[in-house]
Length: 191
Image (cartoon, rainbow, N blue to C red; front, side):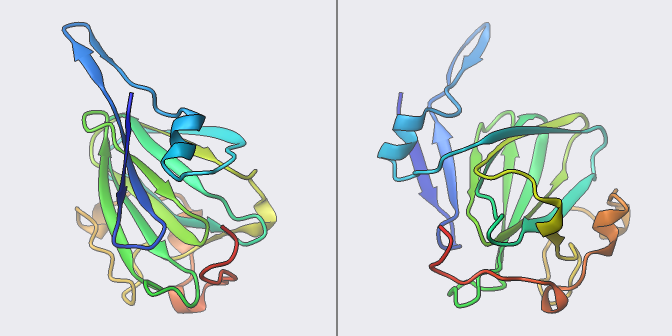
């Protein structure tokens, strides 16, 4: 089995594709194999697996991050359904500081997104009954939990549906703007 790692336009963020073997019964893939990831240059000690279910299309979860030293690298995939996954580089000094990129992750394309420390992350569901599974290399730290407004005009994220149709948690409706958010990441540190 091979592993394909694709650079994104944002430094250190990667798309990961694994071999998928399918036939009339379905498919098989290794979503994570430590030594293969290390050989591909992804040396992350994951400590926890998480999963979320979003029942309706248009559920937006984001834009989340944890302050250093509790920051997390994430490896995400859509187990069922499809999402539009967005990351924003919030590392001061990065050549891509304040820039975002979006990716479609689905049960059909089997793509995974490696989100490095120092990125805000969020996604919106494109289909019903979306299960998202992700690995993190650090534990949840409520005292370091932060977010940025998903509709910040300075970021100008292009969501694939009208923002007035999105379904958000109470918490995600009240994140500060990018310019007002508490951010303590510097490019080149905390990898």
